[in-house]
Image 1 (cartoon, helix red, strand yellow):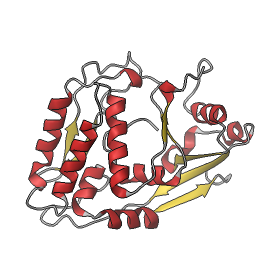
Image 2 (cartoon, rainbow, N blue to C red):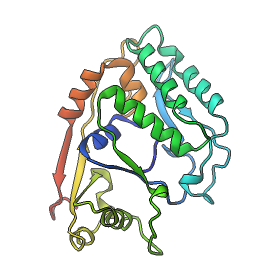
Image 3 (tube, rainbow, N blue to C red):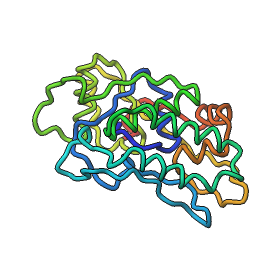
Image 4 (cartoon, helix red, strand yellow):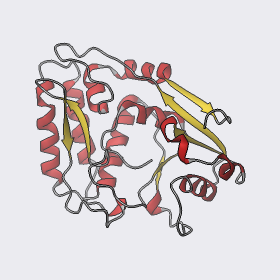
Length: 239
């Protein structure tokens, strides 16, 4: 999966379902995606973006080359956007500490490193095993002209994987035969919506994990991951 900035709960459902997480950072960077922004509650109504400004947001770079304009400014902006939760959300202090841990975990301006540090901080907080490898560090030689559905079976084969799990929403891009030729079992992870109480705010679905953690304890989130996640093997009716 691409490295997202404090992604929604379903992303952690997928992490929780696998033995090895592959940070997919070797393709073209796409501006205005979940890689440098996510959504939290707005203090008045609806939702708002929390964003990490980049120094070089462009389709001319690879994701691994994306650089944060200012880590300190991004940290302060993120914490400022979260400030309205302070007197309302029961786990405000824990989430603020977690955000600081995520930013403290990087010493350079790499967006990928920041996002991986954030994933690691959240997984530690939720007691999720997070074993990962970063594609750009693997020194793999990729065949030319790989299509969207070709990357996963190729990388799986190179790493000796026997099973691959992908979010259900991406099932259309895959040809199961590409996995079968490499003796790799294909699975899809589906995460049903987890609704929770947000007190005086109106609940908004699919927000950043930051919002989920504001209102729910680690145990409650862990239970939600268990109850709302299903892993389905490929069948001819699933594509």
